[in-house]
Amino acid sequence: MSSHNPTINGHLDIIVSSNEDEFEGKKESRNEVLIHGNPEGLRSLANLLFQLADADQESNADLPVGAREHEHLYPGSELSKTSVTVIVGRLDAKGTGTFYERYSAR
Image (cartoon, rainbow, N blue to C red; front, side, top):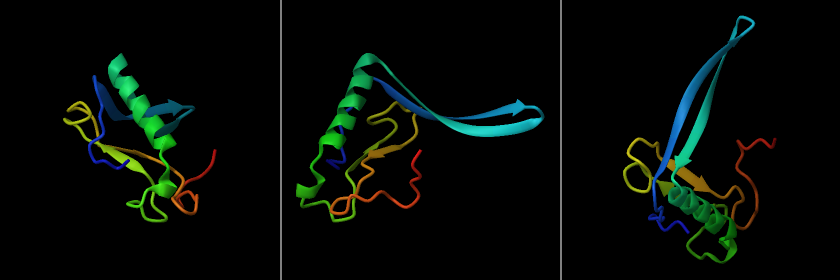
């Protein structure tokens, strides 16, 4: 992976939406990631996710131990011009299988 030029066909828009709710006098803020696309765009994203999931990190000589397969998706290139830059990748590191420090399981 990490081809630096993933193929996304169709239309795909990924944005971050900030929302604020009030309940019993308490305001709560949250961010939501909104992923929208036409069927071709959503299938392309799904295929990219499958490619990342199926990538054999251990046999990739260009991927250092401790690194993770990932792809960058850019506005105006793979994504709509209104999108934010997105990095999608593996959680498990090559050689160790460890997750990054800030990860907190559900």
